[in-house]
Amino acid sequence: MPAKSKAQQQAMAIALHEPSKLYARNQGLAEMSKSDLRDFAETSSKGLPAKKGKGVKGNTFFETKLLSEENCAAMRLRR
Image (cartoon, rainbow, N blue to C red; front, side, top):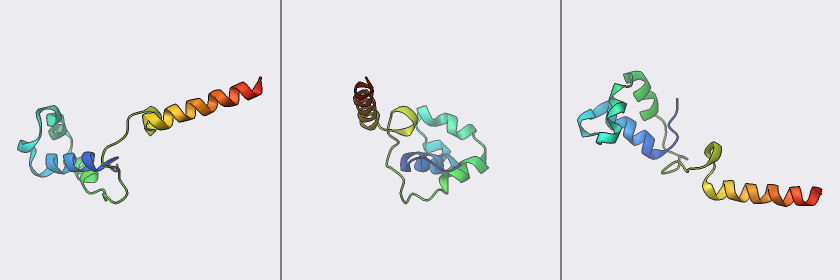
């Protein structure tokens, strides 16, 4: 499973190599299997966003809003 962002890749690497340095909110990562942590940590960071955007199906909020505005405009034209 590849990491979705650089932040996720780095957190998995910390959980794999230095679990004592994890933030309290990330302590659950230490319970993952070593092979899963390795898969996430070994993901190439080239082309990954710094953080994953929030929104629907991986889109950022701005992209989602823009898409919904385009859909509304298309609906008005159909009437």
